[in-house]
Amino acid sequence: MNKPFQFKQFTVNQDQCAMKIGTDGVLLGAWTSIENHPFSILDIGAGTGILSLMLAQRSHAEVIEALEIDDQAYEQCVENFEQSPWNDRLFCYHASLEEFAEEIEDQYDVIICNPPFYSESYKTENKQRDLARFQDAMPFEHLVESVAVLLSENGLFSIVIPFSEEQNFITLASNTGLFPKRITRVKGSPTSEVKRSLLEFTRLKTELKTSELIIETERHRYTNDYIKLTKDFYLKM
Image (cartoon, rainbow, N blue to C red; front, side, top):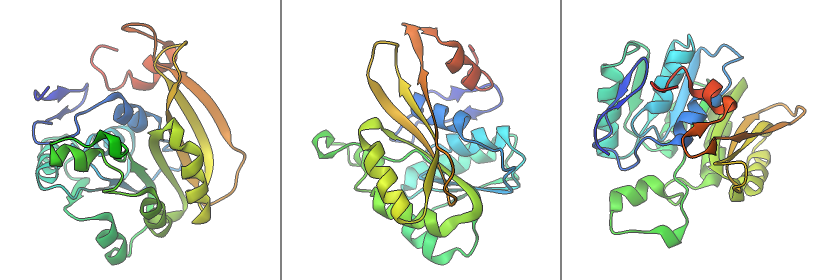
């Protein structure tokens, strides 16, 4: 599991990170809209830095900043940024979201987050992995309040969360003046239940667009939608 993850245009080392690269992160990085031609992007809870790297590949944003609180993940993120083709545009802060939101005056055109989201019942003996997987390390209320401060006027905020949390998260976000613009609900196969929601928020109330994405028709037979979304990244697509 710890060998570097090779994408088409970059490589990600993940041996120091509790949270390895998974489908959620790659989907979010590929799905996030850059239609507003962002100048600046913020990746909250960067882990390996995968989301920042994907957006560096996809966009011309000149400022791509990431936040990571865990020491080892932070060092790994910096290493992944430094050895990427876009190292002049990528920067990682070793800080909590709270500290960052209080100190930084800047606002960002795109904010992206693949947050930790396992409930109490999942606690294990591995402290670092728990920190990475737990929303008590980054409660949703605290996340949306910080995003409301850091998002530019016409900015977009995108996140991947469990489908079971979708309604709750939308309510919390709207309380801070962030409204859903786009939702894609993700299923593993045509017959499986919806597991994840990809959500995009903006400060303006607009007509909500919803869609569904199915990953596989059967084991390792990927749907056209999924291939289209991820083909610029995965080597085998």
